[in-house]
Length: 175
Image (cartoon, rainbow, N blue to C red; front, top):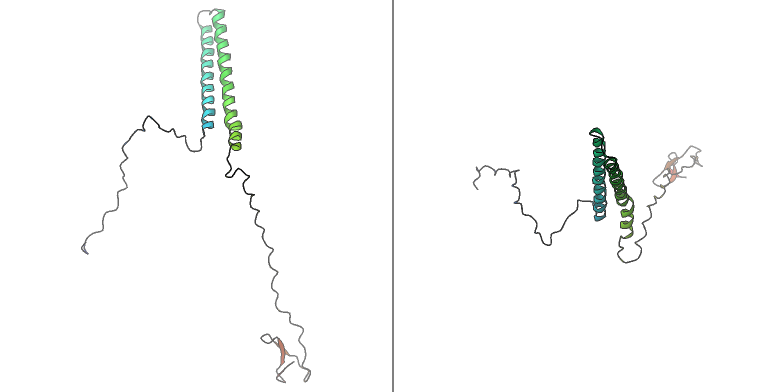
């Protein structure tokens, strides 16, 4: 490259989509959405079937109400429509409640019991919470006794921390 050559252009943000290739029909694997188990799917299908049966029941009930508006329906037709409404709606409500109960209550309990342990024995005991050591006592300044007086001259002495002794400057000696 010559020294006057411009820098290369930045990479393109556009990436073409990969070609679509359907999964092979034999031996294909169905993947559930993240976080969903087979038990969740079964419960969801039961709830869905129950909701469809509730809809069918309401449609039969609507047929019974519509029959009232037209020519006088036969009592057996009206009664059959109402029986269908209560029967199908009742079964649908039962299935919705059953599916909810299975998904929320029963299947999580079953899944928790079937959790395999690695060695067949109970897992390691949970680690104890760390205990904080008490803070160290505050470091006190060295205790300096009351200033003694020089035995020769009677004047106060000065404490010299380097030697941990008292010194009399008048007599030039340690006490």
